[in-house]
Amino acid sequence: MERPLTFTQGCRDGLPIFIGYFPTALAFGLVCRDLGLRTWQAILFSVSNFAGSGQFLAASLMGSGALLAELFISVLLINMRYMFMGAELARKLDPTIKGWQRPLIAFGTTDEVFSVAVLNPSPLPAPYLFGLEGISYLGWVSGTATGFLIGMVLPPLLQLAVGVTLYALFTILLTQQVRQKGLKALALAALSGTIHTVLTVVLSVPVGWSFVISMLSATFIGALIIDEEAI
Image (cartoon, rainbow, N blue to C red; front, side, top):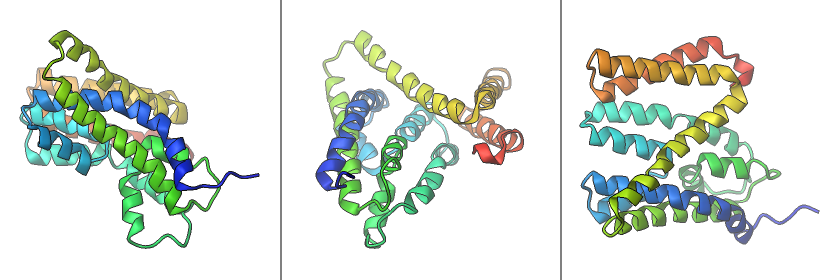
């Protein structure tokens, strides 16, 4: 017997995501504090942008003094995967979902939310998705606010320890790609890192444009060497 996909069930399924997002968002809150943002600016950052890796990248580029164009292109590239997730998720939505509800569902779609949602049988009703995405969103926003506020009292050494979460986040993203596409994905990541290092250290290219060039280069090469079936 299939379980009912209610709002409450969505909250239950999203609770593990909440638990995972909260400490990562703590680290993001600390990063925002280091950037010199105010409390409301840090919270608004997460309220308006529900994209962990994209937010960390944006904060890093802001801290390095990157131009707005550099920041825009870099974040666009790293968040482009959500287009494909959204297209796949749209195929599983309940046809009765209203038009105004679809943008809200799209906004709340993240890697983890998508992974949980697609495991359920179609069609996916709006109440279930709102519960799943809402509890996950709450974990990210509340974690950001908490991280920013505890930065006032947390010793610098502990702040550095929490910052390790950033590397864990990108490691998880890389691991997912390696599992799906094999060692070619790992080789592409290494190539992108090498290009970025050469551009910044050897050629003194600004960090923002270095990110853009290295990501575009890896994307182009990846399109050539990775089979379409593996994408």
